[in-house]
Amino acid sequence: MLKAPPSDTSSGKESNVSYYSKLYPAVFASAQDCFLYDSGGHRYIDFFCAAGSLNYGHNPPRAREALLNYLDAKGVIASLDMLTEARTTFVSRFHEAILAPRNFSYRIHVTAPTGADAVEAALKLARKVTGRRTVAYMEGSFHGVTLGALSVTDYPHVRGAAGIPFEHTLRLPFDNPTRDADDNLSIISALLGLSSTELPAALIVETVQAEGGLRAARPEWLIGLQKLLRERGILLIVDDIQVGCGRTGTFFSFDGLPLAPDIVCLSKSLSGIGIPLSAVLLRPELDVWEPGEHTGTFRGNNLGFVAAAAMLDLWLDESFVAHIDDLDTLFSSLSHSLLASHPDKIVGIRGRGLALGLEFQEPTCANAVMRDAFKFGLMIETSGFRGEVLKIYPPLTASEEVMREAFSVLSKILH
Ligand SMILES: Cc1ncc(COP(=O)(O)O)c(C=O)c1O
Image 1: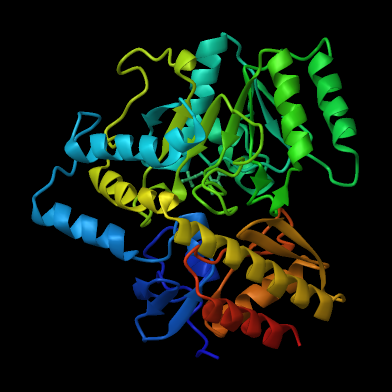
Image 2: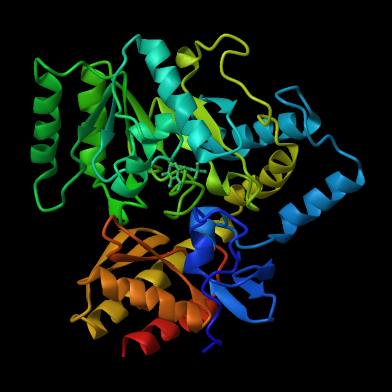
């Protein structure tokens, strides 16, 4: 176990708003693969992955090398949305490695830097395309904290900070696994049919509600939802910011399902190395933007493009994809054994693929395990609006050895 770290590392010089510095009270100095090292030289297994921004681990060599070469060659850093070689390479690589193999014809709107930027663009576009004002969102959702994104975020802690009431949004129930998927959809259908309901422009949904406690929608519910929305001319926006880019085991969280969202939001692990980069994928017919109508200074994050382009080819590499499958199997088996050994504390396993969570009977217990794990050098987070789910995000590149080490820490704490 590590020495007790100081409880506040910012010494009052930074705003109290910082959050993760309080969850993981250390000053970090370097990072590689699955590990973070603090300034005292302590090693931490990072199964938090910057909330899904480091799906390939820290400093993945191919992205790091591409960035070093780019800096050495005095590549363009800031360029708004002018064309640069870095940008055009990223766009073609994204097309070749991700879109073309799936026969997707999406256009890319680079909305960088944050995930909330992608959500803002998606909501605005849906309203512009349909001429409708309302956007529907799901109970339990998290889409970011800028005002537009917050208006479709259900998380009370952050929503309350807006300081204004939200208008033109409609909250709908997420898939409830205790009921038949069709019954859940009938409730949505009834709510949309109410005379007091203004038909929404779009519905924004996470296929696995990550901050909401790793609640995974069932495939049949998602497919039924798409049908229901299409029948009413409501656009389907999938927010794949946290569970896309491989977190569920495939690049898109909806891969393998007969789903064709109208708009997809991506960010977090898109750059592959944690450099801010976000994008909206839109069906070409929806591209009604006038040039410059939705743009901004940092829409051309060339370092993000360079790193992303270096990483995207991995999705064409069979050994990488096979490693994720193996990791998925191991992760699931380790989680189930932990559940079987501690039925008094852990009541279930949530999530899908490498976005798994252990649901605790008591949120206080999940919180205590997270804090103890940090003292033993393992970084994990809680999620769920009561904090009842221990969210475990190993990098997709994690070895069997590090997975077993992380779970042995958890089992030591739970005994
Ligand atoms: C699903 C989802 N959408 C949007 C966001 C917002 O992204 P950002 O924090 O980069 O603004 C997040 C952040 O956690 C998220 O999990």
